[in-house]
Image (cartoon, rainbow, N blue to C red; front, top):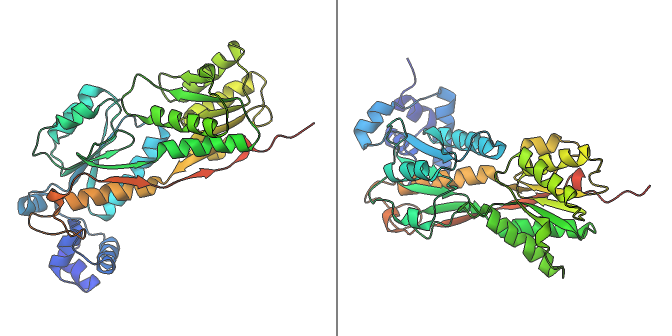
Length: 353
């Protein structure tokens, strides 16, 4: 027979009600007490009874995580971190792939249910195709939603993201600091509404302007998707069109890895001929040859912040969270997560022969 709430309470030295508050992630528990209870939960391998919890509190213990594509290493790593962080809160994560399809994203946003019909207590959504009008049109009364990524929540929902403009400018400044001046940008996506490419493009151009370099539209390449083959194809277009360049800022690591492979096949050398910076800090970039300089978002902090937002929104009616204001009275918050530039071999100083 598995451990009970009473067992956990005895192990942690707290009341059963305190254990229940931690299990349901109510924010009215002191951090030290919460950690003690979570440690007892892990030691005893306590698993809440989802059916009983639903009957008691109208909650399923399920949250939805909607991502554009699970084959993307960035989103795969983020999903793993969200799942681990949710498990510590005794939540179960149902992961859905939207494919960036606007209708699918809209149905998931509006309904608060998975395609299989399962109700969720809250939703983490990374939209690619929904615009501000779609977000404003969401029916009232659904479960709380936290937006991930670059789509501006316009104060309607809590929003967790990094500062893409500043991050892209830092990547470009780094390339400029290595002496590169003809920096190509790979990853523009004017056909999407999510803002990722637009913000990274803006940061790239900002850095060039600050260095007194006029942007060259011929060095700014659009892609259909953000995958390795798209990066390789963009690099080949640059070469075939005899565009002169000595560096690449790629809007994802996958694009960068594809571009580096194509450059190698064409006889180019990284970083001697062309320096390369990516974005996302996926594991593949740490093990590529050469290893990939990249912008590293704090993905673990993104996961924790998003779940903290949901926990506050799920505070019981009448209770006051640590912010001092009832959750329902709070407008959507915009939380900016840190990032850092990780310098590796793909931007090393040129060697001379």
